[in-house]
Image (tube, rainbow, N blue to C red):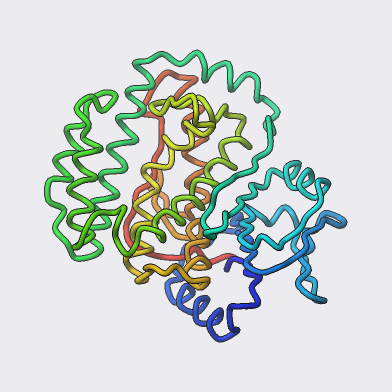
Length: 328
């Protein structure tokens, strides 16, 4: 299922080539629950009528059921929507991401306490012991490093010390295997400079932001207190838990960017491509499914791990190649 893209500046042929490029990677994994990412790149007006999001560009209007929407990304500063529309998007559990003047994401709106057992989940979350948090973080770091190694393998590069680093992560990652792995990983992946000054920097940041919005939407919808992290704990960060859970998913964005040749300047076609991150296939608990479903499974398993005080119950995604889900 392609993201719905509203843009005057994107020629029809260019949009078609983007969709065909992605569809060429569509595989046999069927996801009937996959929802859409809505990307608004031109002046538009958004409103809701009869449970449908109506998007009007010039004199043309399109509608999509709210239950089919995962995240709305608003890039155009000429886009308008009423407070009533924003409120109904919140009621439907839809994340809304806003972009700044540089067209990069700089804000995220999420619903509050959408889960029926929100208070109980938060109570259990706040009662987590430090050793449990450290063991959960260890598993997250291990999964991230293994997925980074999978990216290097997919790109035909040596995994170097990454498999060894993954095996030797300590509780709480006390000796910072995550940092050592990241240094080796990006040195192998990006031949010139570092991630921050590479030609792919903006693409990676954009993809991570889209991914962060989706995980935030799922975490809030699941009743979690997203400001309370397992490892991240900044008082200035409202999404510490999201920034914990995003780590093993980040390599998926890396692989998309490097495989599809996305680089600066980041164009509208590239953003439409990155908005499809949730439609890529990953493996979790031995099952191949879309990234969106993997996120939901990770959050559900985190709940089990917290209740049973067993970090091994946390299920995390595995990356093995690029494939798009097929939606029936």
